[in-house]
Length: 120
Length: 115
Image (cartoon, rainbow over all chains, first blue to last red; front, side, top):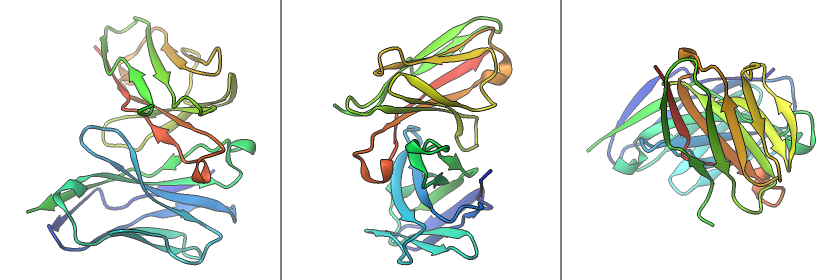
């Protein structure tokens, strides 16, 4: 079974600064997807960024980027130019590439989450 | 369509009562997932539907839990004889083969409090 670990229960950053959230995972699979989700205080989960394990290039979405180290099974999220609206709980998640057509059926395995506070 | 909807948003019940939650996925999505999230933790997978077929259930889904998706559209999650340990946020997500990497879109959740 896959596991996802987020070792930082809480992080804080000053507005306009950069912060990095850590995530490690354990799997015996070679092909999979990794995600970072944001859950604001309103509690609706929003996808921030995704990474396909077969791609060596790190994913980037505007101010959000990842550092994907497949051999180390590490998947960190960097938020640049932090904004007050970035304050939320962030979850790292794993999904097998077998997807909904395979035995994993596309379920997500989440880490414990990191609460990000942004100070003005 | 504005996204995945869940009702009710909040439910308070007494221990031993039965409760039922509803999830309406995005209309063209044939895949539907239920997750449970306890306070301060990440969501945990409960069960998965492809159309009306329930294809996977987690060991977390005890005999007191049952989920249905009778016509492959909305889904219901019922908890019988609720216990205080059932208090959690119940999240529903949907996806379809047409979305990039089968991305799952989440609903706002139903927060259950068992007194």
